[in-house]
Length: 247
Image (cartoon, rainbow, N blue to C red; front, side):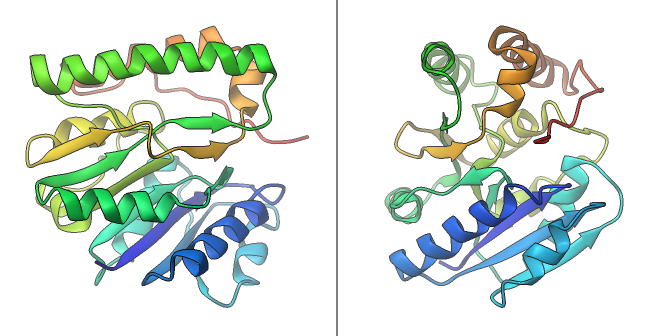
């Protein structure tokens, strides 16, 4: 299966280099047929310039700011690929990540989406401990929603891979969702056409900047509220959000 990474980026000059280095290194390590698309999403800094400095990377410009707008613009450029890996520009892909992706999709023909948790590499020990507790709860909710209630699943935004054909089948991204709830929308709609799996085996390193700035409990509460709102009402409860970037 051919895989392409789609990486939205808005004013990420401080972190996008680390992200792209990790993706390039993981593709080389795994020796797979994979490409990289960076969506320069209305950036006013050097994000686009940095991305274009990598000869193997394709840059798509999306002038309309917004995470879902950027993901959608990136998806439109993925024709010819079987799998679309959606990560964020402040993530770092760990070694073995692609092995897990291809192994899971090869094992289960009904699998249409695979996701897993974040590992916040730059947070304090106590905050990371709190996050791990929330992920324990996340797994319980995943089991409840997928296997008991059958109303959806769990997808971690910035760490999910789906089959391109399946995402086309359910209509693609809903651009009316600006930020919160976009991953749950993916989980709910793809669950209608196949298996959406959330596993601790697919871990992704990322910055904890939002959680550190807004607080773990507040951030977790906002995401949880929108998770249930999208699952049971189809739209997120929260529309406004704050861009958190390094000073």
